[in-house]
Length: 218
Ligand SMILES: Nc1nc2c(ncn2[C@@H]2O[C@H](COP(=O)(O)OP(=O)(O)O)[C@@H](O)[C@H]2O)c(=O)[nH]1
Ligand SMILES: [Mg+2]
Image 1 (spheres, rainbow, N blue to C red):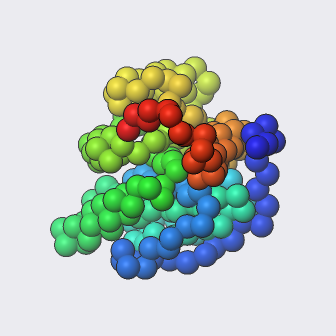
Image 2 (cartoon, rainbow, N blue to C red):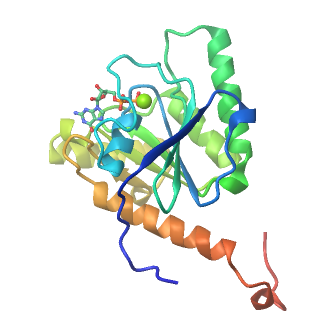
Image 3 (cartoon, rainbow, N blue to C red):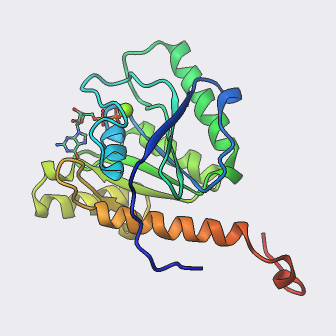
């Protein structure tokens, strides 16, 4: 298995949107989910990875994406999850989102990794903390991706990375700072995806015989 080659993404395409759990797709390759509060920069992050300006629709008006949007990134599937924490929506709408997210993360065998996006400029919100607890609860592997790093000086960014990591009880190595505006941190994200894909593929094709006689801890 060639685990060394760098990840090159070309021709990323939109697959489909799902409004309800019955519409979720069964991915035929490793799937990476992207979540975060509305307006944190999810669509921009996806476009940065895809080298496309408008693969995912960006918006200055938060709270518009109520769907799970799937994209084919070649070696993996990317699932853009509905944004949370948008104040101006009804309680009923919020409950619907929570249900969609819950149903999505329940299919945890199909999710290789989650990128949880958090604004580099601000302390994580209560919703961010809840989201992370949810990921912990489902024992999903995740990385916190800080967005909009270009809006901070290098010094401030370093400070914020430490503060946000501490707030979330994470080591700084679990955070990746990025900017969709400048491409800062993109290489780190691609390297992370590379290792996630390689691990997922190895797990999928592990030879049964190789496991004989070994005790496997679950
Ligand atoms: N300066 C800067 N602005 C960003 C960045 N990422 C997103 N934005 C802006 O933040 C707003 C929300 O971005 P969007 O990707 O639509 O967020 P989403 O709601 O999480 O999908 C848009 O106006 C983007 O142009 C970034 O890295 N740097
Ligand atoms: Mg979006």
